[in-house]
Image (cartoon, rainbow, N blue to C red; front, side, top):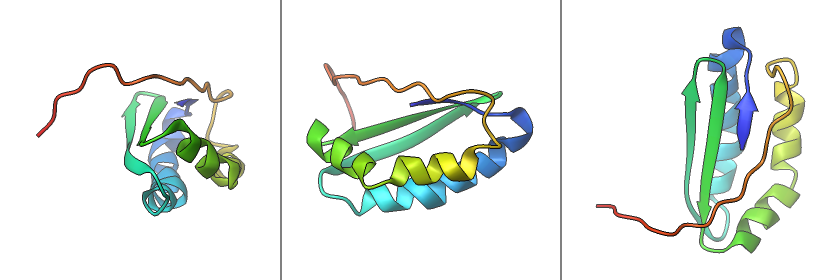
Length: 92
């Protein structure tokens, strides 16, 4: 998910995302990894799940809606969702 964040609100958005999304996601079935990358006035959230249905189930529980409610004044536009398929990976 790509979030257009107001520059002055970036630190607050990161904190809100960590507390409202990251901690909740980590306790969900199928959770693998979640990251929030930031630059200037943009944040990119990347979630990895064992199956797409787990991610969809997590989002249906209202976590995204809760985040959007808390972040409404921090964003300069609407978030843009994208779904990617892992095609190659290397890790430790």
